[in-house]
Length: 354
Image (cartoon, rainbow, N blue to C red; front, top):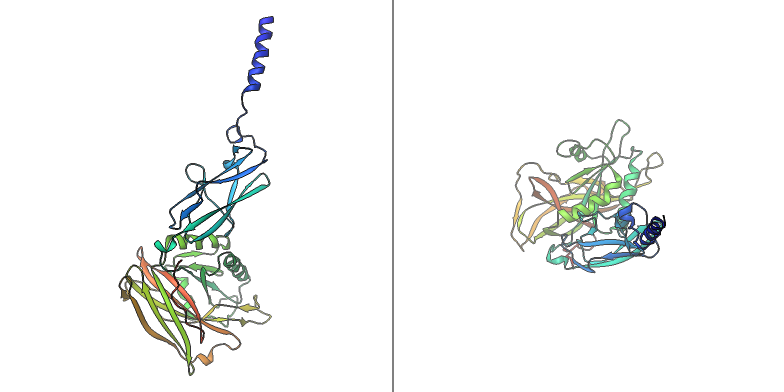
């Protein structure tokens, strides 16, 4: 009896000496206590491939499995790799901040990305074709969502609103070109819908940040565009040049945009900006139509584009032009790069990555 009692007491002592299992192994949550966000490296190459891994520790215990890590700039949560670590790659130079959250506590750390110009010579913007209508009660939500993303990612997109009329109402800013988005390969079902780089069609406003980031990552610019827009009598003249960092075939497209259009009290938005009022006939492409061959490092001056009867454009608004380059990738036309330029403003020159 004494032996059994002795054995029982020894067993209790040994159990007390065994360290408790971590929350990630036992399923029990570890108190946040001192929270640490650990990065595998402080500096990465901005090539979209060099990964930094993040792990989260609370009281010295690895709680990555139960934590969240967010890119502070975009507000997007990072995804995990096969090792269960949060990962991030960069496509722009700069110092980027990340925040880990666990059990109501948070901590941040920063990582520097460098040398983007080695991997993408020209600064890239995403072309956003917003299909919309003044009669559309849901369309202001797309306008707001795009504006919110733009605040977090300034100068990373050029927006163009393509209006159309429907059975729900007549849109005074509707143009015939919008109908092209309702057939293949885009197959837009209704408004509001946005088409990114003529590559991704999406009506879900919550996906804008992810799509913009994905387009910047998967389709780096191979060209830069230089633009000057000016008036000549009642016409708007647009001169544009293109320079290629890789060589290839390109086609330049011209869109006239109006900012500050007012729809009156019967419309759902008080002001309509970046409204497309005129486009060149090649604004979307199908098949293997002729394009300009540009050698690597070569600059090509494209022909002047003229918008006649500009005096008939809506009054009280500001006129701009957007110019974008079409290329063929994976068998379809997408936008390689895009710029915007004020009419009678300063010339927009090539913009390079740092």
